[in-house]
Image 1 (cartoon, one colour):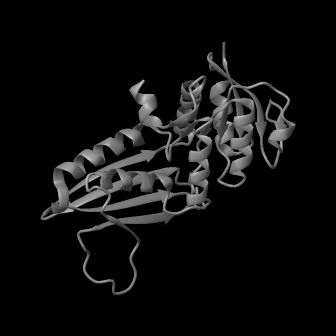
Image 2 (tube, helix red, strand yellow):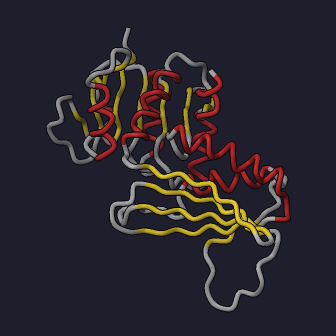
Length: 251
């Protein structure tokens, strides 16, 4: 039996990538989409979840942080798992996600790329070994249409580094003017926006007379679509709770 997917943000670029991959997938299928600006994409597309007529198992959400509760409430009512592939969630949004996770299986990650999640483990290990002898700076680059900064992935990488310091490091978003010498309790995070850059992340460990750099570059959005479909298959029939990429990789 195929995993039946509702694709939120179906008419966007990521929706197109997911649909392209699902066309040849033997284990999953898109039964319908939801999008504020519907168009013909080969499956029914609705502007509201309340109008959906098809039966489904999982929602893949590639829309935005707006109207989050509508998606979560629909998942709760229909007993569906949901893959939250968006970023830019506020503290209130995250609290809402945690609340719904008591009754809904929710897969949330800042980045669905396998490579980025390996990178996350690498930078955490590096921070544990290098300690305060090395300063940590993170540079992320994305296309000029990305709305949030820094990226969710950059923050995820910063959190991984900070775990080695018991969360004691402060995040500094860029620097301007006479800010004084860099302190040891900083992790610098810098955002670049331009052109059609899909996504590049670089974590720099700068020590005395040597620099270690761990980086990842996405050549296309397709890698995120692959991860979203894997997450949908993983979350199908899971018990209510919060899940992320490390859970998928462990299984």
